[in-house]
Every structure is written in structure tokens, then in C-alpha cells.
Image (cartoon, rainbow, N blue to C red; front, top):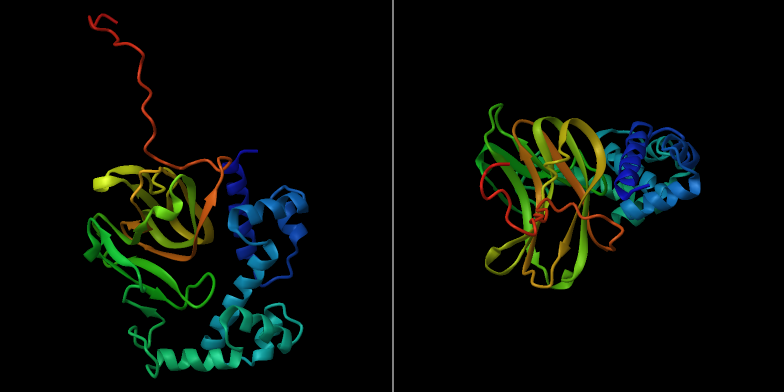
Length: 299
């Protein structure tokens, strides 16, 4: 089976997990749903996402539990049991490992955050309209869109980034992006992966990455235009894979949205991969004929 087919199978499995996240689901159920043996599916899932199925489910449940701590008055033990933990102690250990503070302190911290007693430029809303640190806005019509940090719609941890159209007739596209030196990746194949969620995206959204050479020469590029994310979708895993030639100078990447709708991005990672992982470069090599053709225009 080709790598692309494995990717589709993992995305299908993630859809199943997200739909049954609060249920007692097993690796065997997920593997069966994806039509693989448990061992084979476990290996495929970890290769593509960088984590085991068990780790993925635990992190997603803990992220959901973290939001419950803020948005409800439920007791910590009640939240722990609802999210698959047998005791409050086991929940606290797992929560502290992921969020670096116990659940009770986390609840207090978030309440202070949204009430303005700690630094939060987003006011009392769980979505802040300031860009995440290190990110810049760009695109053809960035002023038709709002970008910022969301602490409600989160895949892992405490926050995600988002782009939202400001009006029904949003023009062009907008991107939330970064750019960095290519030095550490020269001569390698690089995979950018992340989790994306969409709501009522009418045209398209996607991850993108670009490799630039000297004088900003475009060496490699992919923006998922040939496999766009549209409509309303739950969190799922997507990736872009490009070669970084030895003469590369910089790598740019980000999230883009064209047209009405909203898109969220979380849990990005960069990995050096081997030739078994196919490149998604959209700048395909042009196959030239060996000699000129049809010089008399008779054919």
C-alpha cells in the first residue's frame, strides 16, 4: 500500500476517534475500522502522526477535560471519570504531565486569564484577535480576515491558531505564517504536519510550505490546492512534504484560508523523512522532448 493510502487510512481512523472520543474505544476497534491488524495499524499511525494511538486518545481527552475545567462547575473527580480515569490521582498525574500544573490550579489560572487578572489581550473571550507570538499575517487580502489565538477550539494543550473571514464576500486569501533559515534541513526531505479543523469553509483551506533559494527563487512549493480542506470538518492530521535542496536559503510555512469560513491549526511539527515518503511538491519537473517537433505544423 502506498504512503498516500496509509495517510488516508490514518485520517479515517482519526475521524472515528474524534467521533467516539468520550466512549470506551480500543485499539482493536480503531484498527478494525481502518481495515488493518492492530500491530500494522499501530505502526502506521505512529509513523504518520508521531505518536501512538494511546497517546493520541489520552492527549485529546486531557485537552477536552481542560476545557471542561474552565467552562463548567463540575468537580475534578467527575471530569476525571468522564474522561476515562479511574481516580482523581491518576487524572492529576496525567494532567500535570501535559499542562505542567494540577487541574485545580489550571482552572484558577484560566479564570484569571479570561477575567483579565493575567495578561490576555483577548478580553473575556476565549478567542484573542492578536497574532500568536512568532507568527505574521500575510496574503492577498489579509484585512478581509481575522487571525489570532483560540483557547476553546484546541486540539492539544491550551490554545490553537485560527483564521476567520470578516465578511461573507471575503476576497482573495489570507495566511498566518512564519519564515526561517533552511540551514538545518539542507539536503533532506522535510515534512510539515499539523492538525486542522474547519467550519463552513466555502472555497478552501490548507497547510502550505515553500522552500526559497537565493534572491527568493522558488525551489519547492505546496499549498494543498490539489487536496483542499472544505466545509465543516473535525480535527484531523494533514501534511506537506518538500525536498530542501543544498542551495536553499529559507523555508516559509503557514495556514491559509480563501473565502468565507474559519480554520484552526494546532500541534505543528517538522520531521526529516526518507524517500519512502513522497514529496507533495506542486512544481513538477517539465518533461522536455529530445528534439524539436512538428516544425512544419502539418501534424
